Image 1: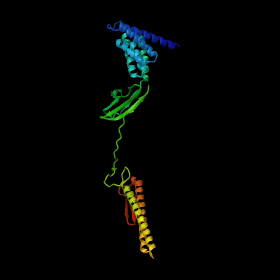
Image 2 (image 1 turned 90 degrees about the vertical axis):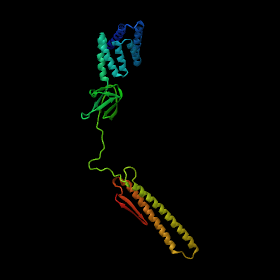
Image 3 (image 1 turned 180 degrees about the vertical axis):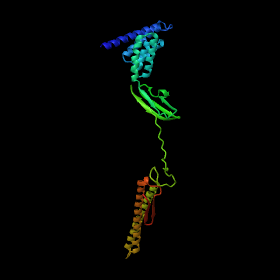
Length: 319
């Protein structure tokens, strides 16, 4: 209780001192009307502070400072900025209040400034930049503002999200967003970008025309094999239908004749054999295409090929 009463007493003394300073230090051009306006605005700002309306209080205090800036008014401005999270501006305002207090012999304000500045230093977030000594000509910006080389070890910022860009030889090597709360810190480290180059003795993939394997999609040879299988399958179906038609025709002829011609039976058998051979070829071709797709990652272009002929289907190559 004694501590709270002491703080309230000191705050009351500071308010009274601010009013007296504003009146005593008002410029000669400021008449009684301006002085009265400054006092009214200051009292309204104090009420806003007690209500926690820091933005409204700040607006009133800046109007007071426009009439006459005193150490006490500047101290209140810094306090409002601190509560609004504008810590860097608050620190600068507290330091300005210290300079005015020394100039105006305002010992009461001077006694309250240093503890506030120390408290702010602990609250202000910090960004650190780490760049190897071997890198020269690096340009660092934080939120679009350049940072000097001497300040890279400790860049004070307000709480929130900040963009850090490190540029070397006109190329942005680092572009990172850093989010910091009060009292936090983070280090942004420059790293050499990785460049993909072939190892010594390693050749680049062949891009010769007609290559059957490709690093993207299905190899061309697989499409050819499966397309050929589809054609063979259609051919087998047509051969089977033709054999069926010949068999039906032979049955009708035999029904009208005393005996059947044995040659008709041979024709039907040949077309059936052709259909079967084509279907076997279709299955082999489709199987070859599937095998190429499965193994194309480890096969070279042209390793697999298919040979098809009347009644003969063969696969040539290695998988």
